[in-house]
Length: 241
Image (tube, rainbow, N blue to C red; front, top):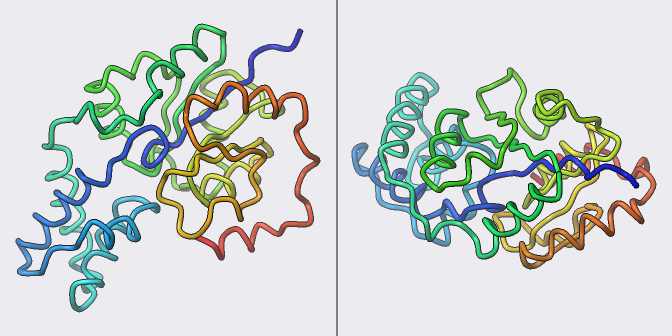
């Protein structure tokens, strides 16, 4: 019998709905720069590629883009504002704690690969009571590369002591699919996250609509993992980000 597959998770839009907290911190930052607030709908279109791009997009969407020399200070202030917010238990998507516990009990090595800064991701998971589930965490500032590059996923697997051959990346958008494809691991997408466009259009191995569907999807991937999508250029994935 095969060993349980290593499973690597994205965080924002996959395990938690971070949009309210991100929006609160971003709007406080914008107010300090005398900018108007972004709406909830606008905010969701800005999320997905890490805090630096969120800040840059937030300013660009509310007036002139920030000069290059102001991006660093604005980003640092945003991270301070965001880190100071208490974790909201209601931000965890339905079924996440129970399903993660089920996978851990079944022996799946579990890791996290996020473009959120490592310290913030770790602190957030700790406040939400999810930290003990994860055997390895790689954040957007852990390596020189970030998703959609494969190195962060490979670093998680190395920390878990797990091979790539049976691993699965679970995320909500093209960054996750592209990183998984480049790393040579399977991918499962959730349909409820922050993907720009239709998640069903992305070449993931499986698409699920509820987190509790994940164990069945993992089993389906184990049994029927398609051949590598060598005819789907990685450039096409990056163009969708």
